Image 1 (cartoon, rainbow, N blue to C red):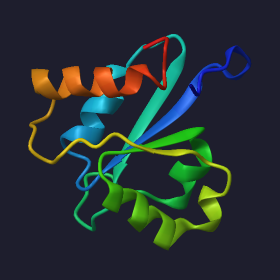
Image 2 (image 1 turned 90 degrees about the vertical axis):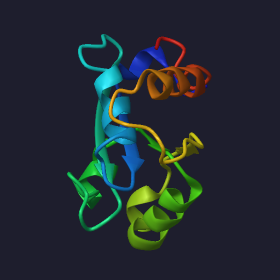
Image 3 (image 1 turned 30 degrees about the horizontal axis):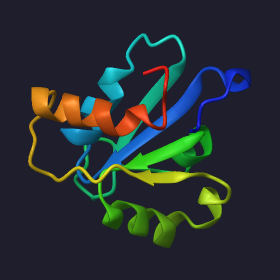
Amino acid sequence: MLDSPTTEPRQLLFICSQNRWRSLTAERLFDGHPHYEARSAGTEPGARVRVQAGHLGWADVIFVMERRHAELLRAKFGAELAGKPIINLRIPDKFQFLAPLLVELLRERLREHLPRL
């Protein structure tokens, strides 16, 4: 569990490939949330918002949708990731933005890490 009352709001970074469907949907789940602040980015050159070192510095915890996203982050931003938890949500790239099944899956996978979701 990553939750701690002394660090509100928790700053959550969600990463997928293009930052169009999965990570952007995850970010939207936290709009106006009283305990968490979320941003999202993508690993690919054509991403809507491409992940930069500043994103990683801002985040308390980083959630990736697939193992390869974590591998890409570690390869490019090893120093910036020091001490940062990276959690793989294991969500495949087969959902549209805000798809009900994607929202349900995100809530289910995040609940164990973010109890005030």
